[in-house]
View 1 (cartoon, helix red, strand yellow):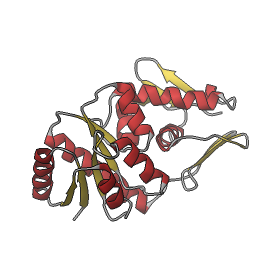
View 2 (cartoon, helix red, strand yellow):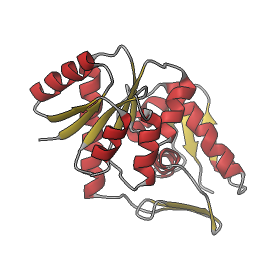
View 3 (cartoon, rainbow, N blue to C red):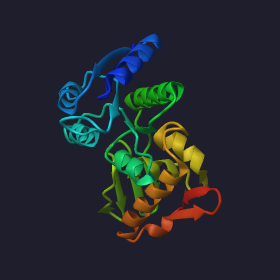
Length: 227
């Protein structure tokens, strides 16, 4: 049974989510403010967190930021009335595993939660293989990237994106496939968020002279070419 922390300042939303997720066979703890949510989540005793962004005491962004800074890697699904692409990108870059815009479908929320839990189970079982493409080395076990021996500092999402592409060298990967590989579900984020993260990743690769390995396949997706 998955243990899920639900955090929302609206009592009606908390009650509805708790009832629905319990009916899905999950154990649910529901809280209504940021500080309480942070204390509970920092224990690492939950399998997933559904976290509203607008909370009293401490915003969902700050709760997530402090969780990741504290080494807690519990999957987090952010929920917000903000539907801007930058808002989504900011949340995902802080370490969220998904982003839902209110009002949302309960069916979609459950699908995202289950996808997050599957990814977590897979990550606990295997880390993936190190990829070496000439001077480019992507090591999922150490979560490091290097170009010609120089380290490339990437966020967790940028790392996952590069690893997904580098694991299929010289092969174009569609945006929808990247959503499944990196975000776990086509519903977890929009195709435009993929573009945003490719831009982030390209700038960091450019900084070490490796920008040419990441290429756009117009009208389809992206590829990492043999360096």
